[in-house]
Each structure stands twice: as C-alpha cells, then as structure tokens.
Image 1 (cartoon, rainbow over the protein chains, first blue to last red):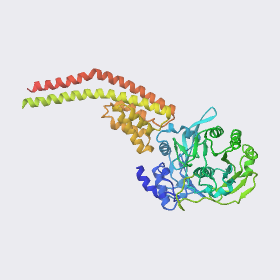
Image 2 (image 1 turned 180 degrees about the vertical axis):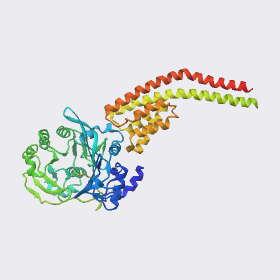
Image 3 (image 1 turned 90 degrees about the horizontal axis):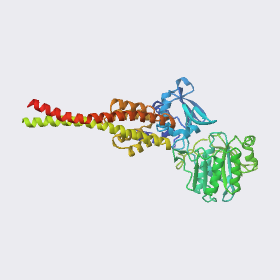
Image 4 (image 1 turned 90 degrees about the vertical axis):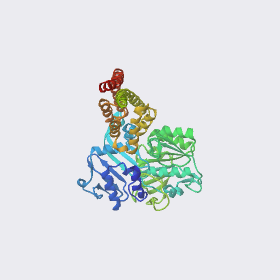
Length: 355
Length: 171
C-alpha cells in the first residue's frame, strides 16, 4: 500500500505539490480531492489545516480556502470536505504509529516534525500540571505545514555576513513567524559545516542547540535535516544551559540556536561570544526597531553581541530579505530581495521549512 | 478385515482424545505466554515509550512460542497500515488466531477488550490497561490450568477406552 502510494506521488517532488509523506496521513477523501486538485493545477500549498467537524482548509501564498470533493478550493465553508472526529483520530493514529503515548513530548510542544522537515501543529485540550503543559488530549486541530526546498539562501547573503575575510560574523535573524528564520539558520549551519558557504571561509565545527527539535527536525530519534558533516546537535536541551554545555564540551567554531530571548539566554550568548565562538540565532520581531522595543530582546541589541542582523519578511514570498544591518544598526544590504529559488529550477533541492 | 477396521476406529478415537487433551494444555501455554508478552509490552511502553509497531516486534522476538505469533502478526499489520489503529489490528489478529492458539471465547473477549484501548492514551493510562488485562488473563490462566489438570487424563483415557468400547460392541 505504502509503496503504491510512493509511486503514485513520486512525480510531485519539487513541483510545488503536496508531499507524499503528508498525503499518506490524510483521510482517503481528502487525499483524492487533493490529487485531483493537483492535477488541475493546485500549486504551492503551504498549509493543510484539518479541524474536527470543520471543512479542510488549504493555505498558499496569497490565497486560502476550503477543499471540495471535486478538488477545488472554495471560500464557502459549506462546500468543503468536513472531517469528523473519527478521521482526525485516524490521522493521529497514523502520525503516532498508533501509539499516542509515544508522542508525549510532541504533544507537550504542540507540534511534530515529519520526514522531510514538514511540520504538523497540534491543538487540543492542554493537560496542565504545576503551571506547565504536560500533554494534550482531545485533539481538535491539525495543521500540516509543507516544507519547501530552498537553495543556497545563506550563500547569497554570505558577502554581507563576514566579519573579516574567512570569519563569519555573529548573526541574529529577525522576522515574524513563518518567514524562514529556522530555514535560514539551518542553511547557514549546513553550508558552514560543509565548508561551501564562502570561498574564504574554511569548513567550521558547528554546534546546534536545538531546544524545540526544529533545526535538526528530530523525531523519534531520527534527524530529518542534513546540518552538515561537522555538526553536533544537542537535542531538546534548554537553550541557555545547552549553549554553555556545547561551548565547554564540544569546542565549536559556530554555535547555532533558535528563538533567543530572556536573561538566561542573553547571559549564555555573551559568554559564548566572549569565548570567541560565532553565534547564529533568531528571534521573533518584525524589524530592528520592533526588536529594540521588546524588553526580552533590548539587552541583546544593546549588548552588541551580534555583529549582523538579518531581517526577513514574506513580502515577496517566504524568506524575502528586508535588509542586513551591522552591529550598530546601519543598513548594509538593500531591501526587497528574495534569495529563494524554488526547487526544480536547478540541481537537487535541500529541504527547508517555513518558520 | 475386521481387525483393520477395529484398528482404524481405535486410532481415530485415541487421536481425538489426545487432541482434546492437547487443546486444553495449549490454552494454558498460550495464556501464559500472552501474559508474559503483556508484561514485556508494559516495560517497552513504560521505560522507552517505544511506538507499538516496534514494541510489538520486540515482544514477539522475546516472548515464548504460542503467544509470540499474535504479537508478530500485530507488528506486521501495524507496519503495513499504522493509520488503521492498533486496536483494530489487535482485534483482527486475536480473532484470526483464536482457533490455532486454542483460546476460548472468554479469553478472546479479554484480549479484544484490551485491544480497544491500545495506543489511544498516555503512558500511565496504557500501563493501567495492560495491568488490568494481565490480571484478567491470570484469572483465565489459573482456571485453564485447573481444567487441564482435571481433564487432560480424562480425555486421553476416554479416547482409548471409548475406541475400545466401540470395537468390542462391533465385534
């Protein structure tokens, strides 16, 4: 069965359609409708949202709607395919390999990563103990986020991100959610580790502190993203503690971590930069000005820990580079360039995911 | 000619008696091995939260023979179609294997009921269900052992003597 589907969907790689790994998990009716839709030119689906007793929603850059049985996308909810509780349960069974207990950590975090870096957001009723979310039950909403391959984004930015010839600067990537922060960090880690980032930069030892298992896409012990041959990943570890552990024990040249903020993180970042390690990190903010307005981020900017800031947006699709700024906030690179190349245009793509 | 016929009757009835006795003995063995298998499954779930396809496969490798087949079948089915749910696969496997594992309908009922909860909740809850099923299986196992102790000899003797009686009557 699985093999048959693999064959059926093998043509879609890189063509902007829905990946087989997601299709396999969806209920039969939705799967059929999507395949009909794809054959009619449904492209660039970014999200497939399944909610209990609600129509299936499809989101793509610039448009959204509900999937009909005929494979069309409509704005009228009444015409969409409604997924009852049993079908949502079936999807969960498929996601968890029929073992919900094995997803405790993923349910607590609220999402899981599929092979290929696609992500599934999960919303249900949170089980809280001691003020912290322990797990989720009665799952009502699932959001399949399709990861699109992105080629060489970080290489296009390389000339602006060098401190001195041969030495990459510490970079903070700023953007609202879904603009490609994590993808950019992943791409940087891969290229630096493989030594193919910039002609003057030798291959470097990269340490990744992956608190939310997003950068390496770890799921059930397997890593779904290639972060390069000289990369060590510390999975599921709190950032501040993890950064110190990696600096002390793994002697990295480059330290990569996701979504920093908070005092402990900043102290650890200062420590790492102080010890001569290049730090690549990201934070939620629409731009430099907005970041300096956030109490959690202001000390980060004032401390001049980072020598470069990259601001991303979705103005021309995900990963539009709004600008590259130096440590003092001066603009180095003009705005509005999108280094994103869709897969299929050339070569073999590497997977990346939005966010 | 008469002697040949008598030998046939005697062999058939003795075989039937031994078959009945063997079924009683096998039921005890099966219940015991499934019981042990559930303990192994409990360990897999409690200590490493192993997903069921892998957990079932591991149990089938370490479990003793008659029951191992059940776990193996579920593991294979789950590997092929994980979205159908472990409960459905478990139930199908129990009902299909019921006959060759010499299980009675009460035993099958205990197992099917356990299957309905399989993989559907968190770790603690799963362990509770496993414990419950284990206890119920232990009760069945004791009852089966008692039955076997009483009736294995009876069936064997009945087979031989019944055959002999038929032969005598026919002669």
